[in-house]
Image (tube, rainbow, N blue to C red; front, side, top):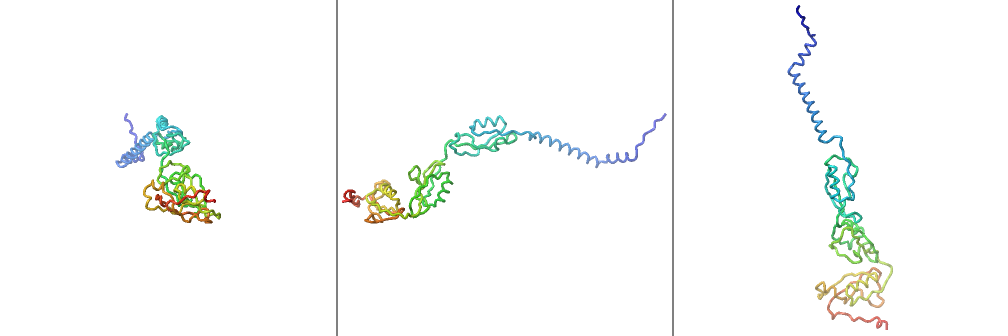
Length: 282
């Protein structure tokens, strides 16, 4: 008995013809291949970036670089030194700042940027702030990393201008190397006083001696004129005043904060006769 052949429906035959067409087959192959490549790339990328895995950045403050490096290596993190500062309250060479901050979540092999406390304070050159306004002087000192210390106001025509820059009670020259963070004291003019004082007699005094006298009288040097006998630095130290203006004559008075011009020499023939105080009073 012969078997009956099953016959496909016309709709199914048309569907088979559609999918067997070479263009449709090519499109389907491309779609499946693209999907496979996309899925493979996503899996590889997730594995490479360790998707979902994060490390907590440890707190490195107070650790030496060697201690910080060991701790970071154990966490599979890297480090990079970016700067150093000086804080006398912190341990020399210890970590004082880091980025990212402690507790932040990062991936493995992330660089942690460190700032350490310098082993010694940095040195800077002392700027010249004499004859600057107080505001300019403060700004200049702070820009060099120096600290404004005690400010002494003295009578002077140059109100609110710096007359002297001092370090530990002594004048400090511009260009002198000094530790960053050092306190610099300033002598500042507060304008001429209404008070008057006799003109001091500076004749025969060396410049350091005369400076002490002027300080007691709340006065300043004006112009200092050297004659041709003053050649070397040693000459300047031993030179004496043989003339001053205004002169210390009877009843001569000046306002506190005024200046006195002086002429100096090492020529002994110009040295004035010094009259002992007891003879002056006779």
